[in-house]
Amino acid sequence: MKKSNSFSVIIPCYNAARTIGRILDNLVHSNYPRNLFEVIVGYDESSDDTFNIISNYDVVLSVSREKGGPSRARNRGAGIARNDYLIFLDSDVIPDRDTLSQFNRAVNRFPEYDIIQAVYSDASYKSIFSQYQQSWFSYFYCLRNNYETNILSSACLCAKKKLFLKTGGFNIRKIIPAVEDIELGYRLLDSGHRILICTDIQLFHDTHFGLIRFIKRNYDVHNFMLMNLTYGRKDIRGKNPEYDLPVKNLFLSTSIVASLIVFFLGLSKIFLFIGIFLIIAQIWLNRNFFRHIARRTGIWKLIPLYLIFHLDNVVKAAGLVYGVIEYYILKKGEIIREYAELPKPEATDD
Image 1: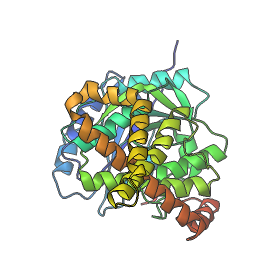
Image 2: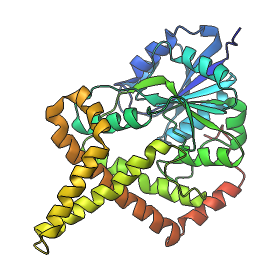
Image 3: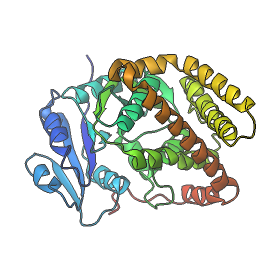
Image 4: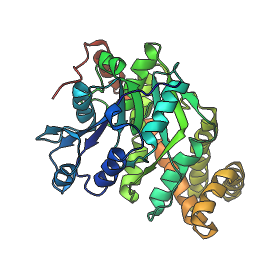
């Protein structure tokens, strides 16, 4: 008979009135035994109705009177958690009522993994930038079922509480904004622990990307590149062979844009033919991905989505280059390594 494990679900929460009610409603009405899980909301002082919504539910509230950020809120929640496993859930990721049962099955099925993380489900979005971003996640993360990875994502993951506390939790020192989860993952990997992407567990990411947020989010890959180099992990695929194609796309899109710029500047007509050839080759290589998007959006949206596809790749390529500069010229890797070798902050840090 499979064991029913105990979980503490930790949700960092700031100005989350739009989504927090649905998250808490699905959790407290979960089909998992109520005595085997608790919900801890790491609440940062918000300017919307978040606090009043949370007050309607039977949850543990960890309050900060200032905006300390999600990693600090996660650490606070872990410090007061009572159960054996921690589930970290972002405040815009909507669980199903079966999500805790799915994590329990995964923990029992994959005992050799210390971290189990869920994936985003395929869904429809009003914003074309959100549609592209989430379609990218749902397609490339789900080309295989239940596989090992080197890249930790804190959007929805399950970890043994003792292990998390032993590591000192997430880095809250603002040295590595946006990639505290990846840094924690590398520390765990260096200690011999293993991370599983469990495609059996899929959750809806209720988010909105406009143009500026989309560019900023994908340029933040420079932090990811800096982290990779700092921890000696130069393969940006993160142990996932499916990422061969996205990595190739970085070079293809950059080459296409450069070729067309050279042509429009009137320097050489040959670059138009080079650009067209690369476009045809890239569309063919990504035909399955574009079919995946077309099934959700319709064919008529493929042209603007293809332009966003190029924007995504060019921005990421620029971010990767800057990440290399940060490591080799600005020497930020040395600062991160110094932190990694220091005693870690307590997970109960306020």
